[in-house]
Image 1: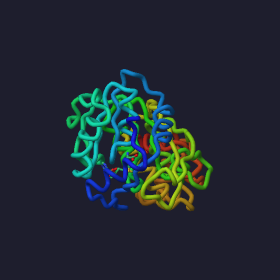
Image 2: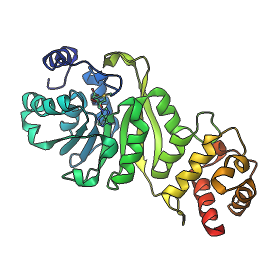
Image 3: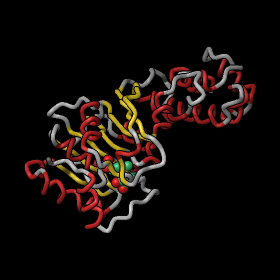
Length: 283
Ligand SMILES: C[S@@+](CC[C@H](N)C(=O)[O-])C[C@H]1O[C@@H](n2cnc3c(N)ncnc32)[C@H](O)[C@@H]1O
């Protein structure tokens, strides 16, 4: 059995004198069934190049290497990054040359940092930066056709939320710019060491084209940020600062075919794109 179980994680943690930190979201999966489930749900093909953010001690990395051609693992913690090739060489020697480890902050990753363009993101994400990591990678790695990520259960709900729901917000709308999002099952807290104080969930992402619009992504996201900064307010009021006044906000909304008395939480990403485009036209 080449996957890591609880005893293997303990041995590795002792060897590295590891003290998992909350700051880096270091909760390691100690259950082979869970990592196999993640890999199965990701619907990978043998020729895929996977980018994994935060490989940690390598639980998911090993399961990925069983299935795909190459894994590019991006780990911010240099101690963990240094150990990973040794773990793979010991447990799955035939896969050692199919792993690339990059010691870096995934939030600063650039395509030039990678030796090959990845097809899919598969990761048990550090929970405090999960949404920014997903958005950043979908933005800078256009070859990604999607991904399967494990995040805090509440974040999974937010990412997959639809307009009209209380938890629909900036993460839901911005992710929808890049991908269709679907919840792909819950994960209990006992599969981790240390045990986190929240449950987790799997989220599947399937890349899609951004909504057709003459506005840039930055312009559309600025509208989204403004609308949700004051989500209880009508769009006319919430967008006043962004538009340079409530009258101009109203004019833009009307030109976009959006009711100025509506709230941001009722709008789809396509609606935000129309607002940004109308603002451009009105000038
Ligand atoms: C939830 S753990 C997952 C570990 C491993 N994949 C597993 O499932 O057992 C998150 C990992 O992400 C790493 N990490 C945290 N912030 C990061 C960042 N900004 N960029 C890259 N890795 C990061 C942590 O050091 C940790 O190894």
